[in-house]
Length: 233
Image 1 (cartoon, rainbow, N blue to C red):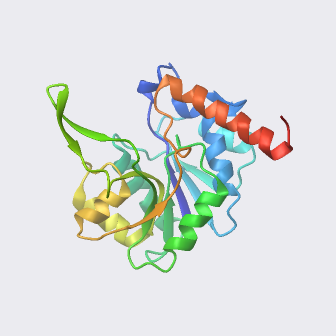
Image 2 (cartoon, rainbow, N blue to C red; image 1 turned 180 degrees about the vertical axis):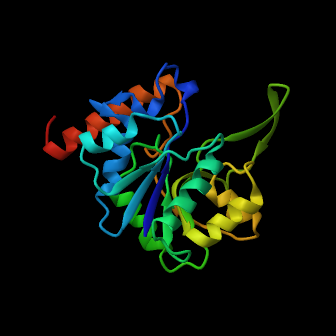
């Protein structure tokens, strides 16, 4: 089993001059929280972080914070799907087999926990397609027409897709190659092939840090977890 973390974006929506994956959250770079969660999973044989070809930061961070499970590959592309495809090809070149499972995770979902990762692995390991963490939609959903409500959409069968998303390397590689760069996650590529990935329930804390205010929320959750872990009030 392998882990693949696409991390080649610039994070322009986060309102910072530096890529958001390198901004500090609760005292350490955001991406280190993500990598530590995966580094704690003994079932993962190898991790790969896909960065932009000119990235000079990630390798130093992996060494500084001692994340031995992960290699860094400067093969990232313009779109997320380009980075994932390049990462899959790199894993195969490193010795992975097409039938091996890979967990693909957004670097910016830094609140992921080993417990959540293991719950996905346990649920999907015997599945013929693969699956993803997701959150059942609880908010009322509206469709819009020129910034006004067009209608209310039933939320009964709606989920918010998260990551990790877990598929076998070979089928995922073929799906992305055929679906192209328009797909925004791995599940979409598999769906394009006519397959139906398994939805595994997760909670709202596994959100993607995207905007400036998200950093404050992520930091507050990390502090809350620290207090709970150490019994402080």
